[in-house]
Each structure stands twice: as structure tokens, then as C-alpha cells.
Image (cartoon, rainbow, N blue to C red):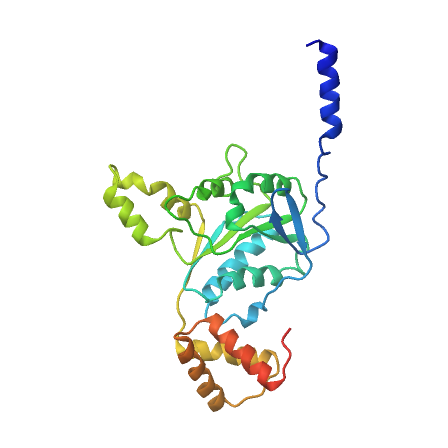
Length: 280
């Protein structure tokens, strides 16, 4: 085939290929959701969250994450954070509440949510964020891995960053029910069946070690459970005496088979609805 024919084919391919997407400005919203294929940042004009003051019983984790995030927003060194522990105790709520608490002080601080199943495209997401002038909390909720899951390798691009290093304007906050991001029975099984047990799970287990902050969340006791509900009542102006609140809340937790921040909010939502109080 002649060079002239090759040139004509190349020009034809250029005409039918889609033009490159312009870089998003990431200025118009406080939060975004990363969605690949095609790659785009979807703006979230209003984040669903509660006020930081309403998160009861997690004072140490709250203060630590708030201080780390404030340093990051100010352009100072900060750690990636893994929030792990009991379900419904406010891990994801804390991440969103901390971001909301710092919005007025640092309007250029954005939060970008990445779904676990989209981690394979995280390098493309980081390329967009690296080129932007804002600072970003990259948020991955309910993170965990199974024995045949290779998504954890993509996550290392955020934690280690390869030869480029993690973007200076990005920090990763992830939540998980598991401290090591994988089930304990899977860890023990791989250790017992591997030729080299110490190396069998080292790669996956060591992933959690790459988070500079480990913030543990543990089940709340009854007093903390009631304090959460009372805090919601006071914040939204719902009047109810302590004896009645205690009796109804304990009955509610009994029907749910446990206590947590999520159960406390669900009870308050029911109570507010019965009292005609709007909480939206």
C-alpha cells in the first residue's frame, strides 16, 4: 500500500474518532462522583450528611480525622485514613461531616466518591485530580476484598502512587467493616494452605498498613445510644421527656436486635415523623 493511501486512511480515522474530552473545572459543586466509561466527574450539588456535632460517641476518631483533614486542606502533610469497625457507627457519616464542617473555611476542598467496583479506573481519576487546582478527599465507602479480587492492586495507585507518587492535592479516606480489608477466615485459610504462609496474604493485608491513620469504631452502649437520639431531638427541636424517650428507644433497639448510630437515626426518623417534625 502506498504512503498516500496510508495518509488518507490516517486522516479518515482522525475524522471519525471522538475529540478528547475537555478537563472538568470541578468548581461548581462541593462534591463529585467518579464514573468511568466514559470517564467523567458527576457533580453532587448537595451532599447527604449530618452535622459533625450530632455524631456522638466517636470523639477521638472525630477529632483525629478533623485535624488531619484541616491540615490537608491547608496544604500541609496529611495521612490517608482507614475508618474500620462496627456497622452503622458513623464511619461514612464522619467523612462527609468533616468535609462539611470545613467547607466555609476551605471552599476549595472537594470530596470525590469512588465506588469499589470502579477502582480499576482510579489511575485515570487521579490524572484528572492531579491537574486540578483544588484539593480532594477521595472517598471509598465500604471497602473490602475477596480472595480472587484484584481491585486492591489499583488502590495502591492512590496509596503509593507508583513512580509519580500520590498527587499532592489528593488524600484517600476509606471505610470498611474489616481492619485488614479482607475476611479473617480467608486470611487464615490462605495461611494454612499456602506453601509460604507468611507471603500468601502479605500483599493484601499490607494494603491496610499503607493507611497512615487507622480509626476504629466500636459498638455503642445503651447510654451512648440514648445520647445520640437526645442529640437529634435537641438539634431538630423535638420535645419529648426523658422517660418516654428511653422507653420507646429501648423498645425500638430490641426489635432491631442491636444498637448503633444508624439504628438511633432510624428511630429518630420514625419519632420525628410521628411528631410531624421535618428533618430534610
